[in-house]
Length: 155
Image 1 (tube, rainbow, N blue to C red):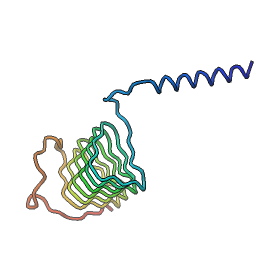
Image 2 (cartoon, rainbow, N blue to C red):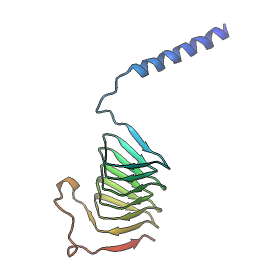
Image 3 (cartoon, helix red, strand yellow):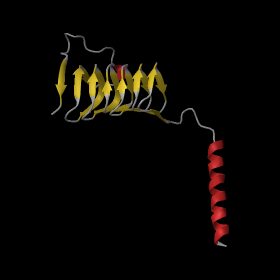
Image 4 (cartoon, helix red, strand yellow):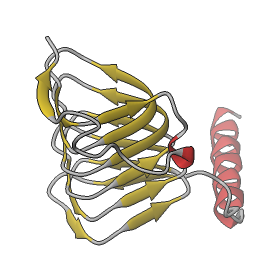
């Protein structure tokens, strides 16, 4: 009887997996995407879901979700997203509609536009920062005479 129960459990498990595989994904269903360490992409990325970058991206990324740049991640292009956690290196403009978090290993070389900003000690940011406005409502970044461009290291 015990062997029959185990086989029955296996059959139920396989049936559930087959049902899940047959399910159609909705275009509006957010997904988690990944650019792994050691992988390099040249070009622009558009995503409806979250995106994690641990490799190299030479191009922009526009995500309706959260963008995470891991410790080994390197982005040379604009980032536009809802939320972002940066631990790696970004060389371009970063526009975040909600919260941008710069981790202690983060290096940002470019301008930031965000509603909220959290910076851990040790993070490096060289550029200008505009906060408090919704980025989509902002018409321009500050010109050189409107803001100063300095390197700041959080301590």
